Length: 137
Image (cartoon, rainbow, N blue to C red):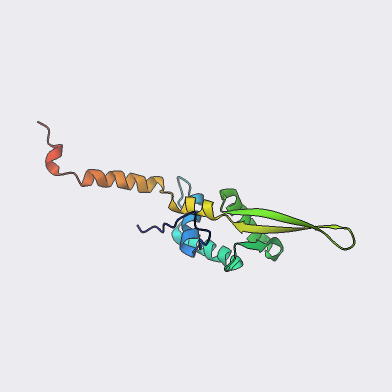
């Protein structure tokens, strides 16, 4: 299995579809049902289409179904929100809500090995042992 590893400290870190898909897959997978990579890629592509080359989008460009997806990803820490307040010329307060990619969390989830992968590695260790080691004297 090939995994993308990118340095977290890089301020110019680019979140790719595959990287975000892996983070979504690892974040949403449950013990009984693992989210398929294809499902995760579809979600990742959909989300990244909003962001384009940026890291922040304004909330009012989302449809309710999209916002639901964003809330799920916020619960996983993949997305986070911020708001900006300004005073209009007539004295009213105006709030602008934004969605941001949480690159550190995306990297953490994307690079996390699942329990199944760890079990496979352990199984592989035993498969690599020579047959004579199992002989009982």
